[in-house]
Image 1 (spheres, rainbow, N blue to C red):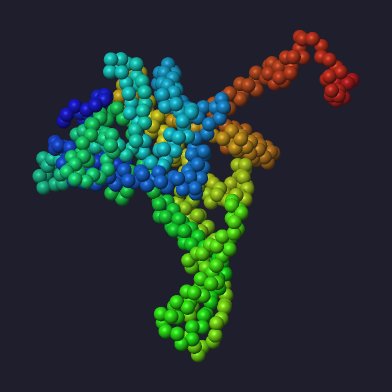
Image 2 (cartoon, rainbow, N blue to C red; image 1 turned 180 degrees about the horizontal axis):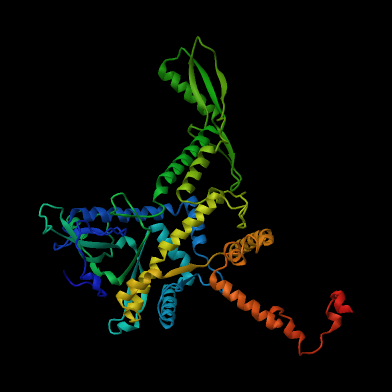
Length: 528
């Protein structure tokens, strides 16, 4: 294989790729090709790439629709919270069993990754791109002369211009030649085409789809939604299941609009008696009558003139129908307008279906809906499902940080590839939550626990031990109980720890009694 652009990290498991009758399942939507051949000679490759590029464009067109845009905005706002003096996301290394200095180095490099992504300023846009497109590509740029300096820049790549390729080698089972063929992944890389992977006409169709720059796997950070089609060959967005409801809603809205325009006005029907006139003369007589009574005088405010506007008859104007001699004479009747023009239940049904397909509660689209403050009595089942859906999105989106952090730590020799595979499984990320709703929820939980504590205190020491109450009612962990016991003991020895104002009242200037407020009642024993 020809040399690849970019850098590649050598890993031990690359040489220990165990054979199997089926390739390793990955939800990255990579194009699987046979190893050893010339890239671009596979007919299915161009069709897959073309379809995926068109799919990304379709998702972006959907995001421009008002209802879909509002749903996406609700999802991104819940997933990414930006507040002053609060980190949008931070790495948690409490469960990682490594030295503290290594943990500190990892935290510092994670902050550096966020700085390279400019995540504090562009976190909303980055998450929205990932959610809408269903994938993110970033080019990791380093200095070849100073590899140990780590990543210099992380640059976004349009997903319609790049594709992941996986080469798979096949061989016969040596133990049983009649058994299923063994498949083994031999190489993975990316192909970038600045013009995009679109269909071309003419002689360039064969070569245009396969031409592009091959890029090493480690030079690209690739994050997907984790959703694939039924064949597992194409990555889908979370918006994919909303394509049909959105098209149905648009079609119904257009049909409703056309119906209202055509049926809203009341129109007149002129039955004109043409007697025994021949057909040609009857039609001419009818046109003359239409012209005679169709004259429309209009006052032009710009010029101050009165002009005659003559228009052709349209679907929203009157009807002129000839009537032969022997029937009734000339007659004018009224065609009534539509009777159910105010009905919008069909449109609302498809709106609810669209929001349900996007996992957004429908009450968020209603302008008269009450704003829940996070209390358990106000939280609906749909809101709970939506919160869990957002948590799953955050978990999947964190692969962006894992991909960048892996390359940064290995390049700076803070970790080896083997260490990363061992310890990275315990890395977790904590996203900021809306402070108002988070505090309201914490206070409500604390109030419920204290209420339960008041009910169970009479039975403490008889049916329940104090330790059991602290673990199961107050939900205190071993570390929390040890910390609280130490603080209680310290407050018993040094009262100033219990009363924040005690230190000011001791050894300082006497308090001004005129500003101290009303005297505090003392117990009877103290007064004696």
